Image (tube, rainbow, N blue to C red; front, top):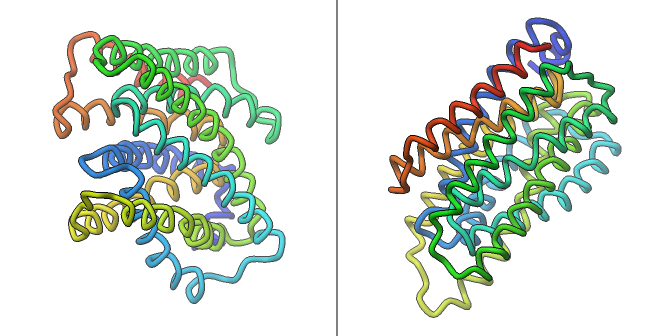
Length: 300
């Protein structure tokens, strides 16, 4: 399977598969974000997700894929640091602002930076039409965040801090997307990088979550938290694994932009599952985001 992925990279067949993987990743990532923001503390939820990720990924990494080279181990070490920063910023942002505010800010900040970074590092070129699509998508996402922000009723200071962490999270998304794309391209077998990535980057937050849980006066019941973490771990494999494989098959910038249609799915999840409002203006902005993704995909 790994050899087949490498063989179709850069071909029309690879581009079609990359598009499909990026869109599947978008749906999965919106669900993943909603799980972290749900009724459990976001630190505990992320710790539970990562704990299950380590458990699920360990046998795959240790016994089912070729072992990494020393170069790949070095790249994985960098991924541990970058993804810890990303998870930290997301937990801090979710602590202070609503899911429908935080998530669009994070996802709207990432594509512009990622596309620019991919142009420099991978010599990818976007047409003027595609840049218009990127602006359309990112603009729609950030306008959606502003719309959601206008209805927030939390303390201004807490909201400002939450937004600051959300912007930091968006920058970290661009950094990890570009870095992970480089890492999976340098690995001889892409599934080796994926399996070890999920294993080693999942070892930090379970420790933080356990310490936080022990300090709580009112500790949540563990079975529902562990079930949420197990579901989240399975979704994470689809979400993060899908977009990383898409960047291995085709342009990093295009995969990153298509994945940010997750904001549309996140708004729908917030509406139908979390009970958050979605009105006509949000529907228009969601359509603008989807239009931007279509322009990027077909404007090259």
